[in-house]
Structures are given as C-alpha cells and as structure tokens.
Length: 393
Ligand SMILES: *Cc1c(COP(=O)(O)O)cnc(C)c1O
Image 1 (cartoon, rainbow, N blue to C red):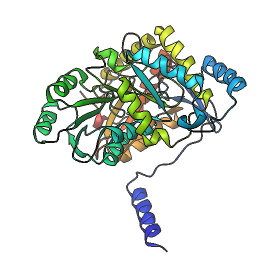
Image 2: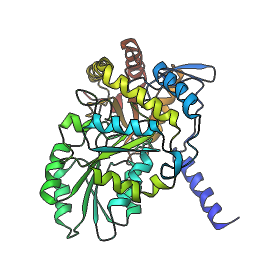
Image 3: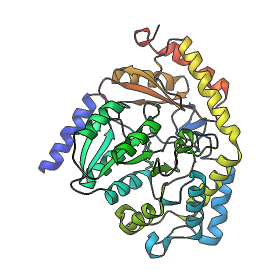
Image 4: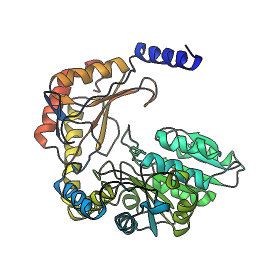
C-alpha cells in the first residue's frame, strides 16, 4: 500500500479509538423543528436554521419563479457570464441592510473567508486571530502568507500584547462575531477601538449573527452599532439564519472591487445558481418584515436558559441561539446525545478537534420554529440524561 494511504488508514483507526469518528446521518425531510430520519421523527435542536426559513414557502416560491427566467445552473463564473440580475439585486439589498457601501456574494462562507484574507494580506503582514475562530478563517490566514498570531478567546489584553509584539506594517484582526460552538459574542466594540488605535483592519465573521442580532436583524454590526469605518470588513452567511445558501462580504467600494479583481475563490468558481440568490432575496424580505421571528427566538433562549439553570445543567455564557452544554468528555457527550436520540431528540455531540480537548459538548440550537412545548420536552430529557457529575449547583 502507498505510504499516503497507509498513513490515512492509521489516522482513521486512531479516530475510531478516540471515539471521535464522525458519521453522516440521512435527513428524510426538510429542515425544521421536527425532522424525519429513516422511520423516526425527531425533535431537532441541531440546525443553524435560526429563523425557521430553510423550508419557508416564500423561499421555495421565489426560487421556483426564478427557474422560468433564469433556468437552473449559473453555467459560468461571475466574471465570465454567470452573474445575473438576481445576484446583483441581492448584493444591493445586502449592502443597504448592513449599511455598507457595497456587498459581494460568495458561493460559501468558507470561500469568502479564504478570499478576503488572501486579497488583503501578503508575506510580511500579520494577522491576529481569536483561538476559537472558525476553521475557514484559520485556513484563510494560513493561505494568505501573513504571519498568524492567535490570542486567547475574547482576551483583548492578550490581543494588545500580540499587536505590540510585531513590527509588521499591515495588520488584520479577524474574529467570529458569534462563536459557532460556544454561542458567545466577540467584544466587537472594543476590538474596533483597538484596531483603530493600532492602525489595523478589523474583520468580523457574522455567520451566526446576521439576520438574528440587532434591532432590525442586520447582525452584529447593527447590534454593536459599528459603522463601516469602525468595522470595515463584514462577512455574513446566507445558509444559516437566512435558510438559503452562500455568503457575502460587505464594506467599502475599494474592498469590494479588490475582491472582484483579485479574490481567487471568487473568480475561479461557478456563480451560485440564480435560484439560490432568489431564495436569499425572499429570506431578506422575511428577516426585514417579520421581526416577531427574532423576538420569539429571543424569548425561547431566555426561557431555556432560566429553566436549564434551575436544573443545574452546565450552561455556557451564551446569549444567542447556540446554547451548548459543556460535558467535557467526548464519550459522555456522545453517549448522552445517543440517549436523547432514543427519546426522540436530535442534537449534536461536538467533540475535538472541532472544540478543544476535554470540552466536548452538546450543541443545542434553538430556532423560531420551536415552541415552548418542544423546549420543555428537551429540558425534561436533559434532566433525565445528563449525569449529576457535570451539573452546576
Ligand atoms: C458556517 C460558518 C462558516 C462557513 O459558512 P458556509 O457558508 O457554511 O461555508 C464560516 N464561519 C463561521 C463562523 C461559520 O459558522
């Protein structure tokens, strides 16, 4: 056997032994509060469909309608002939909503994070990352050629130290606005101040904040009241709360033009199908027109946290729809998730390397599609299945 395949087999074996082996499950229904898996109906607390839009009739209708005008595939990259009116309209709407000069759509958040760091950074620059940043941000930094300096999670004095430790002229600070496995927020206001004082650029990945946070749902920039000058690079995704697919970067005219000219993950890839842009436009209408979805979600979050605290469940300090329970041991997290599955509840056991060693957790996500009765059932089942050893007094 080749050396490479032999090594791969060893890694697979190791992963099995560590109880970290991942298996995919087949969904047999649309995304929602209740999902079908095989012959089982499960109450779902693991999607990122925070506003319950992934199966909303308006998104489906708008996508269907677009088929008549645009067909299915985009058939080319944006710079050749794959860029449609719908893509353009979506970009204008996103820019307006986030109060930025312009926005540019990408085929995924992963691609956007690779693109923006590649375009801005070069050898000799320094890029500063929170330790819990999403894998796509990290990969983007590594591809950029800049020196990567990581700081402790949400520790601004550590960031300050790291900034002071370099003489690099070009500096970028990149963070998740909402941490995907912890649910807590980056202190964006303070980060914006630090960036300004230090002459660094600030990039926020708002995958879990866009469409959820802020009075009008425009995300973390709105929540923290940060203008384009204060937060010059705003990345958002359309596959989570927006219930659609893709991502965008919003910012200045120069930033967006720079990305169009130089971003390899933008230039050398096929444009999103127009129907996906159409569905995103329908989702934007709902996000902007139905604030009650966000209010319902916030009520459910408060309700869940209050009752979970009463039960001594190991909550983390998250104000968002991501409400992890910290169990520590990977085997325990997996066993607990499996026990819950037997009681009709689906949630993900998140284990290393997605999260640091000994911080395996149940990642519970709440959505506007849930009802209180769903949350009550979840809490009862957690009470029966989470061992006392990990409870808080
Ligand atoms: C999901 C996610 C991404 C990737 O977005 P996709 O559109 O799914 O590729 C990037 N950053 C964070 C923080 C995410 O949670």
